[in-house]
Length: 515
Image (cartoon, rainbow, N blue to C red; front, side):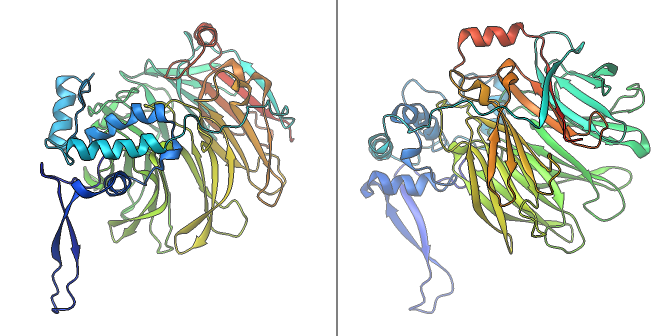
């Protein structure tokens, strides 16, 4: 979480404004508000809502709030006894945070006001959340599931899967920085290695270039160690550094956003507490950097002419604190931000698809929410997959919700070939004790935006983090390949964790049997 605006002052004085129309004044007049007299609920509305969409106290248990609130206080300059906002951060990372002003040097609330705010959440929160039992789903009949042997080596730690329809190759990135090219038979045809893990690739076949997105650190850090690296698709023999010192980048696009006929590069710097969306404009001889947003948490971006003015706009999902889907409208090279949908920070947004799912000709939003790796690692009944239908004028309305613990990645395609869009999702934070069989879910569209859910018996054979879809076996229908990542946080039973660490099941192939 990061404050949109900070309320300074040791004496707890806030400044609000109103228009003095009685005197005909055009300038607003400042009105002082003493927070010492506000009850806890009103304090929470003022301060929490200034940072992100307001999370209702009932969204977490009392025990979870006890873990979360001290960390929330750090963003208001409040450091409780036994806590340290810089704990676990090295000198360099701490300096980046200090320069960015992430943690205010003075408290925004007195001790008594902060305690009232905390008490409101703790007194209003339930002892437990009402979560449905995890019943095993019926076995999916559309796909044939198989764990495929590979020579990737080691325990599963796949952090990238990109299928290339052009050359019918699968690109696999792992935690050690290896990028491996696999044939449709999952045999290694080429590989290279970067210093850090690669999380996304872009293929430029016309010039034989493979762009690789080096995240820098997979674990949450705020040191700008990410990079965009170029090699050649044909042989992985060349190596060129395009950009460096990126803030934990997790997605990027290569498109002509400026209309000069050259491909620019847009980078989602997820970061941690510091992040950004940056557009690197290609001038032909160099790249000029433009910052579209300086908030952290940008997890995925797509390019689309959203306002139908013949240039490319950007639609981005944010999954860190100030969560939601935002559009950046391209207006003659300047980008104007518009919020399409907004979520409270406990949703843990992880992925989205922007395409027409109701068949009315305009793009809709399908969003997965399920990141559960921070301070409240409990099962959350509001985690899952949401469909937002386009109402026109950049307005979106939620029409469908499928609960799924830890929903992480998704694909929206006509997998069964019946003319409508189906949904497939994997969960990185499922119910580790009772719901591993439901960590892979296929939602078959019945034609009216109602979905029938089915699962896969092999779902418990890995901890699934990444996926891609495409016609891998070249038979005319869409298959799915999923990558396992045996690391990461979570309350995982010891026997399950040991099974995943000892496994050699890096990939699960779902072969579509439609054709």
